[in-house]
Image (tube, rainbow, N blue to C red; front, side, top):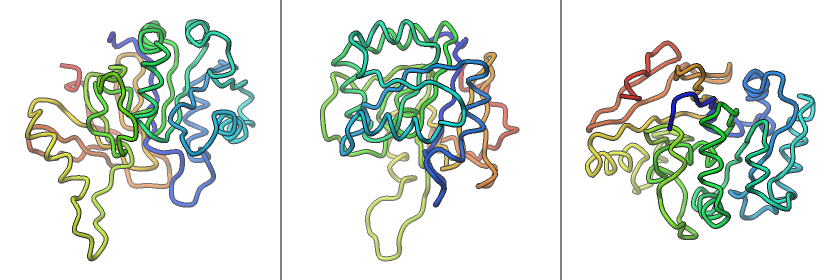
Length: 241
């Protein structure tokens, strides 16, 4: 994928007890600039209908003055992508999201639009699919997509909602241990882990970590068995090499 992409990849739709997308509204507004319409992809929603999900996003971003239309509301979803001024993809189940994108033949249209510079906004699962594959998602595989290969808008893996918290008495693997398993089998592939309240932003061929006022300025890169802390000042150009 050409690095002319214009991406805002949010870790989460909330931070702690904040209202839906409220912590990210400033970032979203800045990312969209003068754009007043976007196509929203609600396919990660499973226990909520696509109409309900779209309404939830419309309500959350109402004061931005942006017209938000669910892709399921168009007669031709592919045409909707090709005509989109901006694309937003919500969180939920990553496997169902990718399954639907393959089923509706939307992978290539999204890739082509983003390569042309059309703004892309994702949160949680919507950020996960921007990576090379969904092999580092946190979600349960409730459905089998045609492939684990994702949009490839960036050539590394993502892990939104990153935390290494392990509840007392819990004997399951931590997130860090799961990512360590991936690194054993994929030693050269970077994983960028973004904590809730942060995002990756790619504009003008420059990738950076951005954070809101709700959290500390930190993220992580996992690669080759190592974990490296990063912040908003860290140069991430090597991720494209």
